[in-house]
Image (cartoon, rainbow, N blue to C red):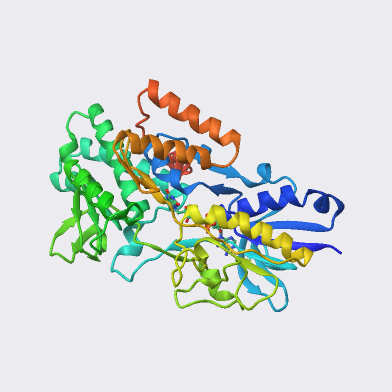
Length: 438
Ligand SMILES: Cc1cc2nc3c(=O)[nH]c(=O)nc-3n(C[C@H](O)[C@H](O)[C@H](O)COP(=O)(O)OP(=O)(O)OC[C@H]3O[C@@H](n4cnc5c(N)ncnc54)[C@H](O)[C@@H]3O)c2cc1C
């Protein structure tokens, strides 16, 4: 009998689960006994740890995404969003990129919908804030920083210049610290092409509500990172909150007030909102309630993993697995195996992985790492960061492209042009039409 496996979300968990199922259920898929479908608004998986390098121009954004249709030729890919899950009826409501929504039926569902930025109701945030989770955001941020250097160089107004050259990042986890450090490094490098801008003219502000920076690498390496950022002239404000940013006027809880053209919000994540439109159980933190075997608690035929799932950490009783790629990739492997066990009526196995620490890039040749208790800083950590992520980025094709990008960057100067007009490709044509009317 045909079994339909539906994977909602084609990110880390979705892609790696489908890859393993595609490999292990090859004959069943060929005979039509098993069908696998992925639904995701994007046709690619984003390798998020490379977003900061893509923003800094060390990597082509196209090389940090994995095209789902090419990697998963046996899997049906539907582009659009799941807006509702009715597990008791074994259907989801699917809103395609264009046209009417429709129901898609399944036998087994995998909830792999990841997370979105966790925001707060801060005045002005919706108008000027930008997140840092998507390729589009990384590209836009890169274009913006370079464009604002052009603005600052070309204006006579000191207020406009100061505002253009002020960049605020809120949240000192992985995403905030790496994005800020990489962009600061790129901007510093770019100033040599400007006559009136030196690195000291650019103000970088990192705002963090807690007293910890980069908790993923532990307290000691976090403190070192803080010192390193401050030595680079970055204004790091610990135990400080963003109170307001209406019209770009930033007000912080320590009393500081200044204008900034750019505010990047990286202060945590929360499960994708579709989790609330399901009949699946949800825990107190809004995640899908998941067992150690990556099944949805108390429900038959439903699995979950990654940022959207509250997976108990069997290596640390009472705690949950943190939302990171290290867990997501490993969970996907166990999840795929457990789906096969489930289809065969076999005993499922527990997901067990002890967090091994982390690596972070802080700009070209700079990094920090704490892996298996080995603490590294500077160049060795940066080298480890690159080799680790190179080993993890999906497919040989992407690995080769990433290596080529890095090798070219060794021999040629970094690209420092803003292609911001790509975000408004019709402006030029509209202006031409208007000019012809005159
Ligand atoms: C800048 C940055 C740097 C990071 N660096 C690291 C690092 O160095 N190490 C580390 O371990 N982790 C890192 N992470 C975290 C890591 O990327 C995430 O933990 C990981 O992506 C989680 O995998 P996931 O499959 O749960 O979610 P994702 O990979 O985010 O995938 C979720 C997918 O679901 C799709 N989706 C969402 N809602 C719907 C819906 N309603 N219908 C259909 N599809 C939907 C999304 O489009 C997305 O493709 C970083 C994250 C960021 C943002």
